[in-house]
Structures are given as structure tokens and as C-alpha cells.
Image (spheres, rainbow, N blue to C red):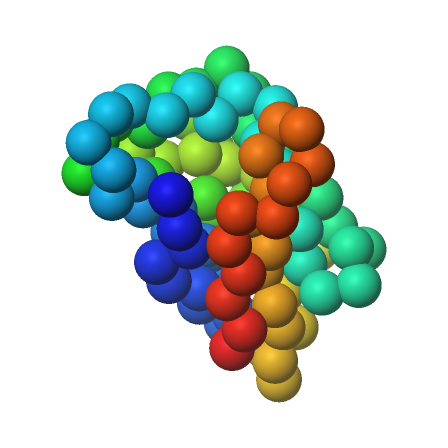
Length: 99
């Protein structure tokens, strides 16, 4: 399980399951640098080899897209640079990407 991409301007982060088994992400969290913004995953399982894109805006969740639910002018990621951190449900840091 890793963060495979982060787009600061377009406000999304991609999480990829490169393992051979599905991973239940329920209760996992994504945080920005300084932990000012936190997204907690709803009941969700990411299939082996699959990628899910987490958008910060509002939308309808699907098997490949999740939505943070923030308004369009309420950015999470700092365009001049930020860090996305992925934590499992027990609070263990799984991966981090800096852009």
C-alpha cells in the first residue's frame, strides 16, 4: 500500500495497493503536512493492484474515486509544496509523499 501520486493544484492524492491481497482501508487516514487536514476512510476495500483517487472536493464515492467533501475554495494541499501521509487504522505511518 503506497501513495502513488499527489497533485497539489488539482487537489487529489492516489493510493495504490501493489500487494497480492485486497486491503480494507476503513479507518485509515490521509493527512497533510502539519496535520491541519485529515481524511478518514469510510468502509472501503482496495483490490489487489488497484488505485483509488481521493479528491478533496465533494462528489459520489465509487470503487476508484473517493471524495473528501470539502468546498471548491477550501483547499487542503498547499500549491507551493506539501506532504501527504497515509496512516493505517491503528495510527502507523504506512507511506508519505512530498511534492
